[in-house]
Length: 305
Ligand code: CP
Ligand code: NVA
Image 1 (cartoon, rainbow, N blue to C red):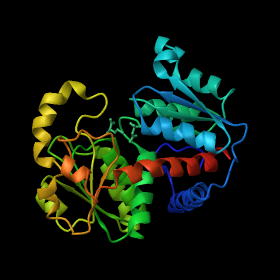
Image 2: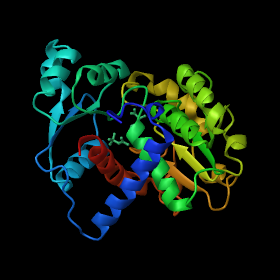
Image 3: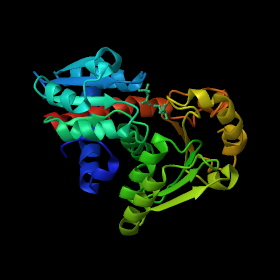
Image 4: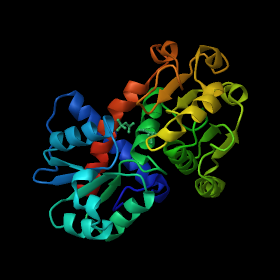
């Protein structure tokens, strides 16, 4: 593992290693044990989009590991004035020990990783959100003790989170239903690759358009906002198209009794998910948010330690 750009680049062994280190790191923190393997190291965090969880969890994570994190707003860097990603990658590699980048174009992250001589971590692109889905998988494992055999249903927009879910499920041999409206399906290339990976792992990735049948007997019901960053101009259409895909009490009656509801957050309460569901004991979105911290600390240690 040199970078973390996509779950599709990871082997099952890599993923298991990340989960094991996450568990150890979480235990250490819970028992107030200091663990500072990144003393003297600096992570640059480039943000071209807003963030609450990613920014705070990476910054706090670096601090807890004994290192330092530098918040770099993309609009304040020379990138904004036309310096290339390549030159930025080469320059930052002379100062930093790692780069975390959140941006629109996935190509920019791939290019950054290609030309940087230090590890690059994808903190979300228009196509993927690998740190999120790794933390999600870890959270499910923590709660249910297993991953294989569960019916995991993603409902809503076929966005970056859905795409990373397709990779995560295919790599680990899981059963995943991606339920989206027509024209809002996950990325075709991603699904093609995920299905190819599934052939050797026994995963079952199903695309569906019908929430009621998709959610039947689900162990996990997952949703994300309908209007991702950058899609604001489509607000009106999206609110209309996605309405039948809301995760609410009535829909959840079709899932298993002990089904858990997940959301990467931020949520738009009353749109993709109701208050009733988010405030119920089924909702584990804040555990997911917490696990972003522990899991990303594991990634930082594995890449920069
Ligand atoms: N889930 C997630 O990445 O949240 P932020 O946009 O707040 O970082
Ligand atoms: N799909 C969302 C995820 C936010 C964490 C977005 O890209 O805005």
